Image 1 (cartoon, rainbow, N blue to C red):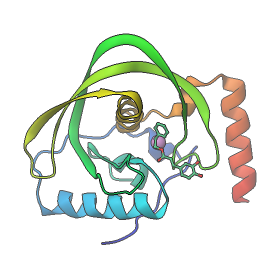
Image 2: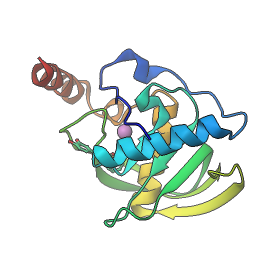
Image 3: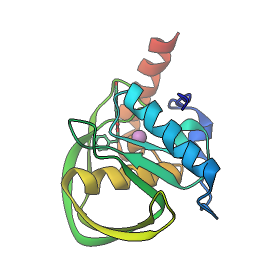
Image 4: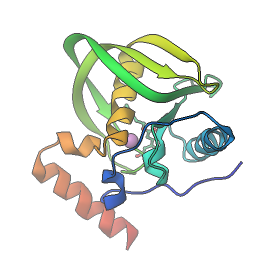
Length: 165
Ligand code: QAP
Ligand code: CO
């Protein structure tokens, strides 16, 4: 397994729309393994392939404290089951050090392929619902900072630039 480089805001490559995975082959499985290693190393709970500069529709997640509940979503789709919004303090490995409240639908149905290429459905509430929407946004080239005011977004961009220099 290999640790991959995580793109950081405002890298324009984070804006590339990811392509659907055509076949879940060994290359995709290797990508998934590398994404889990990268996410664990960075102490994340969710990572989209877009964040490691691979523009294919692959997401990995582990929301458990023990880090023993790996989740894989290939070509994920969601259907909003309840529009009622859940405000959640979101962070992102591509925006290190910043957390801001974002409102998203609190109850969704996820349809995706698993690591073996088999279709599955999963009903999601709470953090899982929030996290899958955050990660699918990455595949569309969208970041949680896009939901903030231009003022807040600009402040984050400037602070990150300063941190890196
Ligand atoms: C997305 O984010 C998420 O700033 C996953 O210094 C997060 O794994 C969705 C992280 C919260 C919903 C709620 C962020 C690690 C990890 C940081 C992450 C940091 C170190 C973020
Ligand atoms: Co993110």
